[in-house]
Image 1 (cartoon, helix red, strand yellow):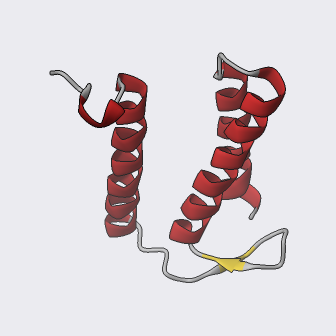
Image 2 (spheres, helix red, strand yellow; image 1 turned 45 degrees about the vertical axis):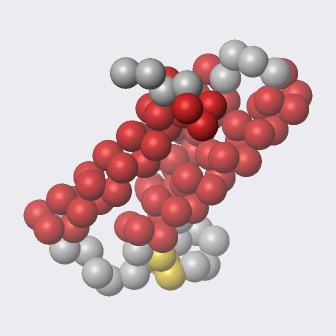
Length: 93
C-alpha cells in the first residue's frame, strides 16, 4: 500500500491506528465495566476514563514535542516517558 499521497508515512499511519485502537479499547472497557462515576484525583479534578485518556494523549503530544526540541530524533525516550506518564494519569489523576 502506497501512503505517499498527502505525505503519509507508516509511523503517521501507525499513530492514527493507535488512537483508533485506544478509543475502541476504551469502548469495550466501558461496556464490560461501566465506570460512569467521576473520580477525584491528585489534581483535584473530577475525571472519567475518557477524560484521563484525553489528558494522556495531550500530555504525550507535549512530551514528544519537548523531546524533539531538546534531543531531536529518535523518539524512543519520549515514548518511554509518555507511557510512564499515561500509567500515572490513569492511576492517580
